[in-house]
Length: 192
Image (cartoon, rainbow, N blue to C red; front, side, top):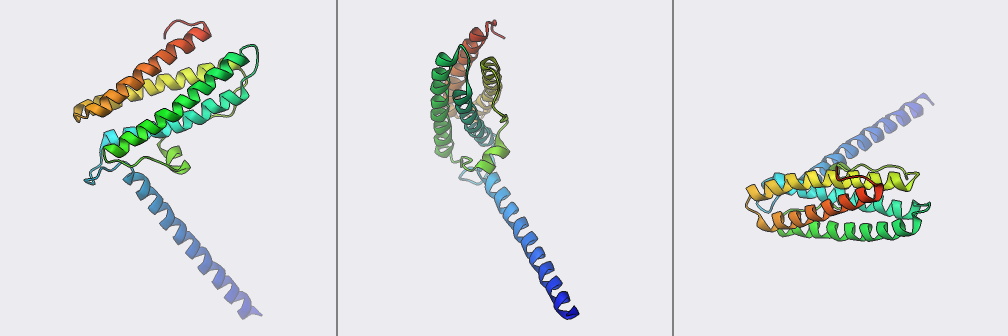
């Protein structure tokens, strides 16, 4: 009986070691895959490609957040905000696609799994907000963050003489600035 228990313990330890080893290998492969997402065709890392991937991740998170606002909004502004949030999450979906296709066009690989998106995004998720004003304020703040980060990516695109990416980001930044103005107007605030 003691030998059986000892053998059973041995087998459990080996299985545990194997599982730990497989998990470490899987995590390493996932990390390598994620880091290779910002590599160009030539294999060289580019800060611009990384920033584009960060924006792809941000727009994926933002798409879900705006969709959440669309579902959970209530109160006297329900009808106009419900429609506006739908317009904005549909726009977010198109922006996400445009950014990913641009990244592919310049030799990068867009993040495309939930894990990669969670690692790359700087826009944070949150639980559903209680009031329409909180939703609008949160969205406005996310857009302001995207304006800043898009500006950084534009500078890099200019340094790398990537006019196509620069122009696409300029158009995106202009659209975001208009959204911030409109959301501030909804909140009864001046441009901040």
